[in-house]
Image (cartoon, rainbow, N blue to C red; front, side, top):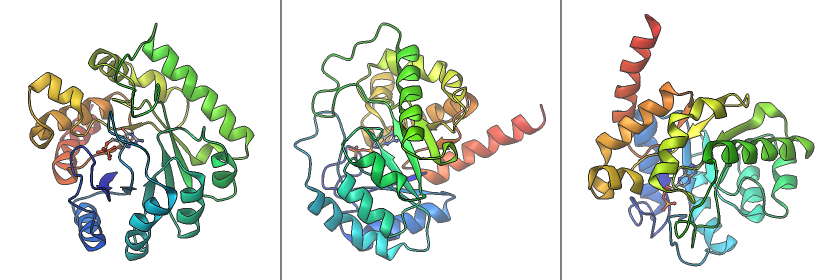
Length: 257
Ligand code: HH2
């Protein structure tokens, strides 16, 4: 999954793809590099992000890009039912909800369509989630949350085949929480649906390497490979070509086991 943020303020690519033509060109570039799916986001969820943007503003940013990319499989990163309804009608292949369809109205909107949905774990909300992340057993708690969300979406009429889960690296988690989830990712894969992992350029990698977001490529690839080895089948990344190269080595080794 290649990331294109149509925002002024995303932590690593904010402002670069706010112009629809730039976002469309970037999406095509990522597909040429080997992305199977493009994740479009129009609202930053970075830690400490300012007040939410309105649904109108989100759609104003998204629609020209969606309409310019009709030929590509698109995921839309949004938490708002009004935005979900419109992008699903425009043909989005996946709703990527960092709130796991907990906002009122979202379950019904997704159930009425046939697109896939990514249910992500987050403790708290983006504005404050990194202030005091706290768990007794992070893996067990994230797993229980995701199981509850899987049960809820199924009860709302969304078939299991449409569901993807994500532990939400960096969303209300310390570096140690993120590492513990990465070590035990296979326990989440045991829930029986594909696992998506998003480590690309995240601040935990900055903590490990001492490098700013733009210099975290090698660390991002290392985390992506470990996630893939531990059962993730969708990797959410900004740097598709480099990640593909790394995955081709992993695939070759795995094949001849
Ligand atoms: N991470 C970000 C945004 N959306 N969605 C899922 N499912 N998993 C993630 O790990 C995830 C996500 C944050 O990264 P980015 O989009 O680069 O930044 P921002 O939120 O500042 O736009």
